[in-house]
Length: 274
Image (cartoon, rainbow, N blue to C red; front, side, top):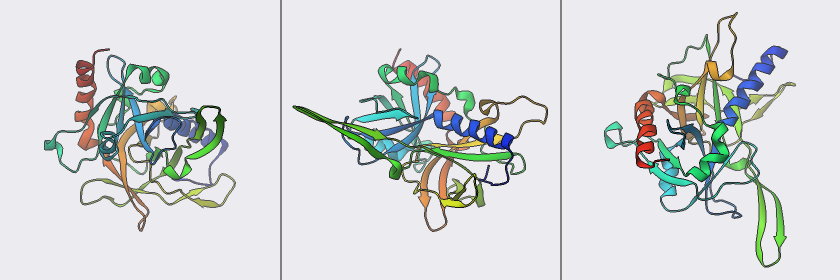
């Protein structure tokens, strides 16, 4: 789904539905307590365990920092973050490779309740990261750090100021570069410019902060088929790194982590009974 100015009104409506669907499944993670302005922001995708606990799939390097500090979490269009959300942290076993940069954050039930309607089922995870350019469109979603902004600071007598933060997510229609994988097997995704609906282009923001977000593949349905974003969309990767020189966002492909994550959802239910 590369950004294009040659779209019909029907195309525009479909793209808008897809972008809204992608945004709704994203959460952001950040250190500290409210109302502190965070030093960093990371992205995640929220899933449900079989028993209904929220679990955030994210980049492994994000939770390396979470071992040392409390995490807050927010979601699309929320006004402020939920504090102290972590029930447990899980990383893949060494046999999957020391460089595999993914992790799972088991949420407390208090943090699960506000986002229950946003949680994805494991059926949203693709079986492979294979992309057919003639039939598939790629969308990347996340929360770039440079789009975090302070909206309002309210001074309160004998209390800490109340800080309202703005959290803007990005959904970006793009494609794979040539070659499609780097030497570590990660997907190579173009991150350069967005075509505006009225014409012209703008440079995409620095993607720092989208690590842990989602790379979605949306497969074109049959001409006469009814469709929805959830019926044609599957997650094929987790963004983890960026090379500015080549405008490349690298993502861990689903082939590497799918079975581990599916087992982890079940294991979290066993470790933390609801």
